[in-house]
Image (cartoon, rainbow, N blue to C red; front, side, top):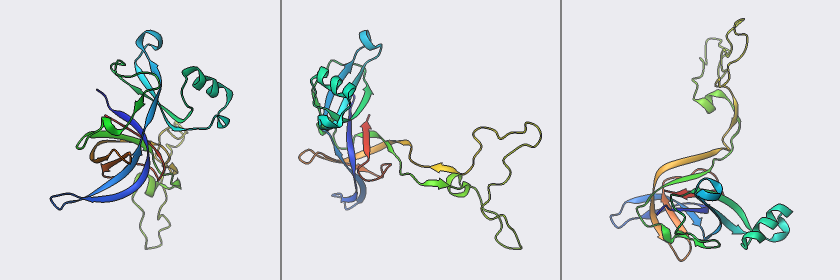
Length: 205
C-alpha cells in the first residue's frame, strides 16, 4: 500500500537514541487528512486520491469551492493535494488518512516550498567565484560577461544570473522517520525539511 499524508512543519529538535547517538530531527504535525475525492481510470483516465487538510469555515470559500465540497459531502478543507495510486480499493470517500500508515525507519520523500531569499546575486545564487579584492580591481562580485557580441546579439535563455532565490517547491528523497507519535499526531523525520515553520509539507513513499 502506498503511503502519503499532508502536514505542517513545526520546527527542529533532537532525539537521543538508546545507543546514545543524538539524531537531529524535523517535527511535522501530520494529518488527519480527509479523502475528498477519488480519481478513477474509467472517469478521469488515471487513479489518484485527493486529500484535504485543515478544516476551513465555509465563509472563507468562493461559490465554486463551496459547491464542490457540498457535492462531495465533505467538510471544507484549506489545502487539497492529489496523490497518484496504483489502486483505489483501500480508500473510500470522506475516509481518513492519518499517521498510523507510517512506522519507524520508513524511508520517505518530503516536498515543501523552500524559504524565499529575495533577490540574490550570482555568488550566492550560483556559487560563482568572486574577483580579486586587491591591486585596484573593480570586479569583486560582478557576474562577468553574459552575451556573445554581435552574433547572436542576445542573451541565451537559462544564463546563470542574479535573480529571485528560493520560494519554490523542493523534494528531498530518502529521509528516515525516527519516531511516530500517534497520540499527538507528530512525525519525527531525520534531517532537515525544506521551508519555514508552519509550511505545508507533503510526505509520501
